[in-house]
Image (cartoon, rainbow, N blue to C red; front, side, top):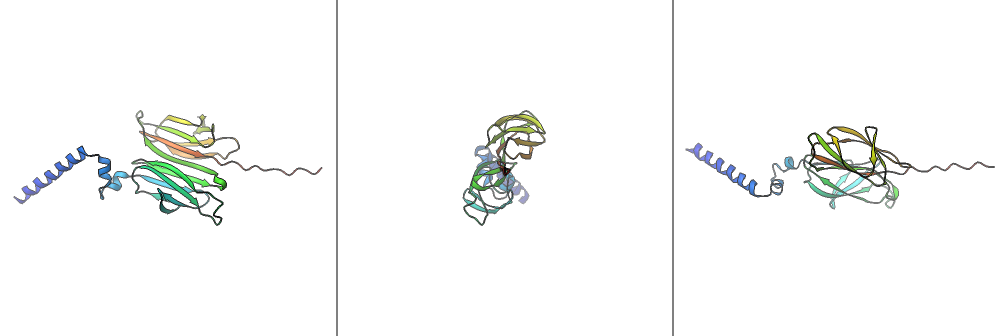
Length: 214
């Protein structure tokens, strides 16, 4: 009799949960369940500051210093602020970036913060996209217009690049323009996603040779 009552209780509970999940918005509900929310969200944000450390704030909440990997953020849009750590407070400006986090993906900010607001690096994040099987798409923006895009050493086009379809695999991406340092980074095209890249190029310092004495 006890086993029979237990079976009825389990069946009723499962039925109630099924009805609840069917009729209520699942994203908001599941995100609030303490046991499974970390598995359901499954988002990763990596933040790296090249050639130096930076303080990290996300939506005005301090998270520590770079390098930093965060695994417990819900999917959605975030504002990330980086403040390069330096003895000269006014030498480097705070930098703010907007980034989207999507379930089951890794987003990445890898930036060198230079003086006077000069940046070099990239922001990468994925968004869902309806693609053909075993394909994904690539979109690229660059702070230097009409920079040249190369994928696996083959020229593609100038920036910006919008929804460029590629087979699912890893690639070597280069963004090149005259008088700027080349941005070279590996990328991974995922099935059913668009990889969004915002690129920043660092100007190459100009060297002036001393004029020969006459």
